[in-house]
Image (cartoon, rainbow, N blue to C red; front, top):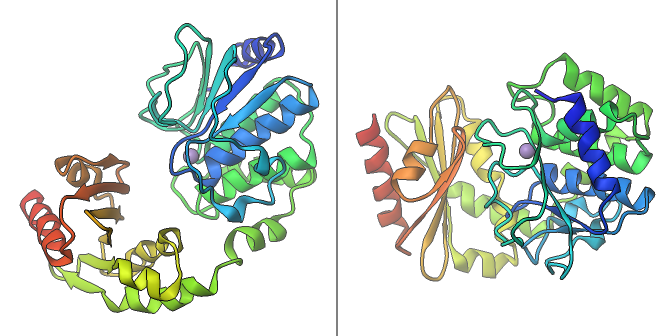
Length: 318
Ligand SMILES: [Mn+2]
């Protein structure tokens, strides 16, 4: 649960800092980046020097409408005296080494968060970290500008899969309501997030969907993508990320698996519904993740071999 005093103390600490480093997680999603940018917009307003860091060179371009998006950097500044982690279930998620002895603010909603910060603003009842950041603003009576409102609405909308995940409740809608009052535009945000796909994606998608096979009485659906398909269509791997969710949306399917073959290995993304824990399967293959969304790497470039390894494991797990 979010503690008012900790929110106030954390803000005081931010205000007394000379340079704040805001860390977002690898393979960034809209939640981590929108939280980082909401804080960045606040810090620039109150004139605190800072940087939003993300390890990746290629950030999801569909988030480029968020104010200060272009300022996100993969360069660590030489000097910083406060670090804020956003949407990071553990300290390793940003995949970067920070200097020892620096104060850490940890803002997150993962149930697995072990409160690694000096200030922990965490709440695992929230469907997104954006809701936790919203509470941080509210507890401190901070002004929510249209830029901040757009960031936070984006994080909530995206991480709750359009207000459809189990942790969405009346408070989620209350916050969304207030963010719209503050200047977030729901239809514009949905257009920016959902309706700007590349043509290449739609050249690739039929190939990938055509690879669909159902196993174990239809409960497990597999699809794959081969490197030559990416070459032929000019699509990126990121273009195919939601194909696995399409397979999971098939009524009989409880586990959907996307196998992405690369030059030297195969990456597997696993999704589940009906309370099935795919993180256990990923863990057995040295991967990890959440109960309903996990991943691992298979040391083969033969897609049938990769499929066999993972299906045998699912069978043995029951
Ligand atoms: Mn999140």
